[in-house]
Image 1 (cartoon, helix red, strand yellow):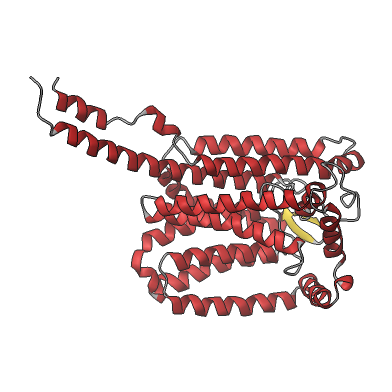
Image 2 (cartoon, helix red, strand yellow):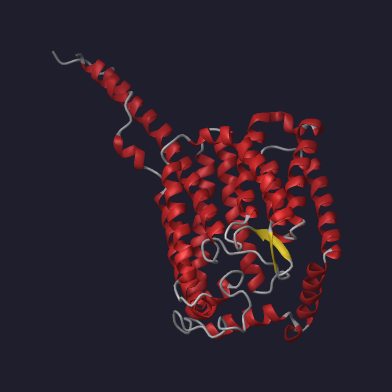
Length: 397
C-alpha cells in the first residue's frame, strides 16, 4: 500500500481518544455543583427525614437515586449524535402537554398547588423546561429566515409558548412559566427574529405578567411584601427575613457544614427554595461566591459550546440549555438576596428535588454531547489538512 493510501485510510477513521474529547471544564463545573448540592441537601434534610420519615437519610437517598439516573441518562446521550434528538422533540412535546393537562385533573394538591405526581416526586413542569428547549430549537432551526415573517414565526411561536405557560400557570406556578417564557424568547431573538416583533412580544408578555400577578393572590402578596421590605427590611416577608438572617449569620467563612440553625424551622423550605441561604450560612460568603463562580463557569462553557456548534440546531440547543440553567440560578440567588420579589424556584443542582436534578443533568449531558461533536468535526479536518501536506511531499524511493 502506498504512503498516500495509508494516509487516506487514516483520515477516514476517528481516533478513539477523540470520542472522549468533550468540554472538561463544563463537566468540572457541573460536577462541582453536584457535589456541593448533595452536601447541602443532606445538611438541610437530615432533621426533616427524622421527623417525617424516621430516617435521617431518607431525602438524600432519593436525591442520590435521581443523581444516578441523571448521570446514566447523560452517559447514554453521549453515545449518539445529538441531532437524533430532533426525532423526539415533537413526541416529547406532546407527551409533556398531556402530562401538564392531566396534572390539573388528577394531580396531587400540596399547599394549594397541583404540581406533581406520586407525593411530588415527579413534577412535569421540570420536564417542560427541557422539552420546550428541544422543540423550539428544532422548530426555529427548521424555519431559517422565515421566522422574521409574522405568519411563520411570531404567531405560531407565541401560541406554542402560550399554551405551555398557561398550563403551568394553572397549577399555579407563575415563576416556572416566567422562566420558560424568558428562555423561549431568548432563543427566538438569537435565532434571528425581527427585533420589532421581539420588542412587541416582550411588551405584551410584560403586560400579561403584570395582570397575572394581580390576578393570583399569592403572587400579589409577595410583590406587596417586596415593595414594603424595600423601604424597610424589617417589614419584609418572613421568608426573605429568614434567608437574609441565614446569610448574615454565615459571615465570611460560615458556621460550618451541617451547623446551620435557620434550617431547623425558621427558614421555610430550606431544602428546596432556601438551599442557597443554607449554603451561605454554613460556608459563608466564600462558599456562596464559589458556587456562583461554578455557575458562571457553566454559563461560559455553555456559550462557548454553542458558538462552536457545527449548525444552527446545535447552537440553539446549547444556548437554550445554558440560558435555562443560568436564568434559573440567577432568579433563585436574586430571591434569596432580596433583589427581586420572592418566588419559589429551585436552585439547579443544589435544591432538593429529583425531577430538577435529573433534568439538569440531562441538559448538561446534551451540552457535553454538542461540545464533543464540535471537537470531532474540527479535529479530523485539521488532520486531513496535515495529511494532504504530507501526501504532496516528494516520495522517497
